[in-house]
Amino acid sequence: MRALQALSLALAVMTAGPAPAQVFDYESLPGWAEDDHLAALQTFRHTCDLMTDPDWTPVCRLALDVDDNEAAARQFFELLFKPVLLGQPPALFTGYYEPVLEGSPIRTARFAWPIYRRPPELRDGAVWYDRATIDSGILRGRGLEIAWLDDPVEVFFLHIQGSGRIHLPGGHTIRVGYAGRNGYAYRSVGQELVNRGVFSPSQVSADTIRAWVRANPDAGMALLNLNPSYVFFRTLADLPDAKGPIGAMGRSITPLRSVAIDPDHIPLGAPVWVEKDGADPIHRLMIAQDTGGAIKGAQRADIFFGTGVDAGQAAGAIKDGGRLLLLLPIDRAYAMLTGD
Image (cartoon, rainbow, N blue to C red; front, side):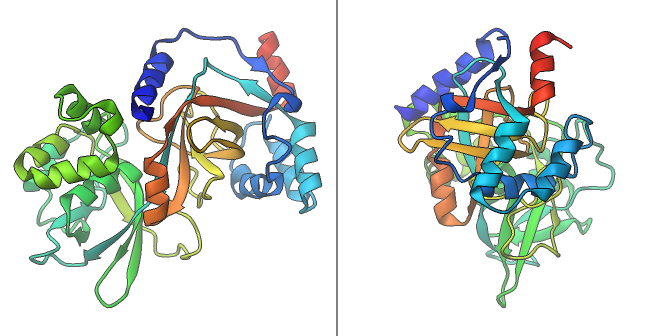
């Protein structure tokens, strides 16, 4: 039922006409007073120096001087920002995470599926070879392999998540992050299984897709190749274990405080107020520090849940509606309303 509701929400987001921006008071945001504003402020500080727009640089300088306590952090946001609703709810919230996988630095009988570095000839925005062509071996022999994994399904889902940790023989672990893609738009293989009548919308999840592909190897690989989008990676040699993966702003992201958004609607680095419905509601101030190929629209967001199996289970269960509000510097918020 929740997945069916999510499909309806996505359709509503895609078909709804533009709605004027609305400014809200903090008293009207359910859960605002109970949130950990200091945690949000610390996450905001992590990337705000990268925001070079004149509306944002003064508030970033002030953020660095705020006392490290909850009362001061809450006052910072309430005095300097206004919550603004862009687009037309319901929002569509999903989740993502950093998987932990087994791999090898060389190809073996077990580890036979590569993840690749970005080819030097690949250009941002240009359409290159599709997934099926790349999987057929067109890049073999060029030394672009970062590691080899033991399951093509996990390679596919690593592409969707955009980052991961790979345990190698001998106890060494490498971390990989997004380095580019082949220029094709993402196509949902879960939706394809629904269209074929294999599963109902309420049955589709990452786990059911994994199980179906493994149970139907030939048809399963053909299904995965229906998504032409392909992601290339880079190694993150200097990233400490305690830090999250690297987001679109080039810095680590924070579990349940960082969110991927559409930068055509929400500035990277901006605070956003998340009101996620569903079985496990979330009312929390997060920071827009990442993007994603499937994240499109002012009321679309992907919440980062952390690293490992538990984070993956939590992220995979999220397909919920609600509302997403952008916290804008006060002057910018009122200028938007007046059209200045």
